[in-house]
Image 1 (cartoon, one colour):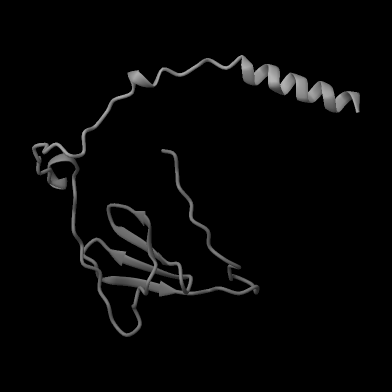
Image 2: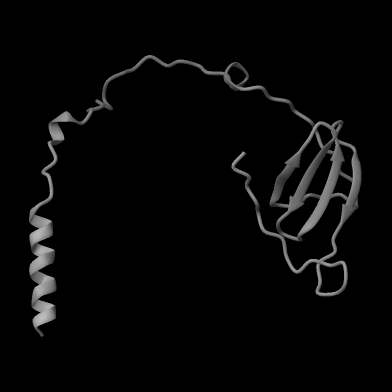
Length: 118
């Protein structure tokens, strides 16, 4: 019982010690005012390359393709819905396609997304 009262007292004490926020320093945007529009093209701020990937009856990326890896020679795409792996060359032509999902030898149980910090 004493511990509960002490905890409540310390909680109220710490809440009372918080610094008050002055909301008049926050920027205010008038949404009724007309602001000038500036058109920004992605090509102006980033290097882009469009590579159409080959699609055949065997190579259908489905609803959730995920660009997993990109090198000077290859594009690796993981199809999240079916857990297929597609390997394309830099021209977009299919090099390899496999799905080794399972629990046997040389099979994978599942694939997770990995993001490198480098």
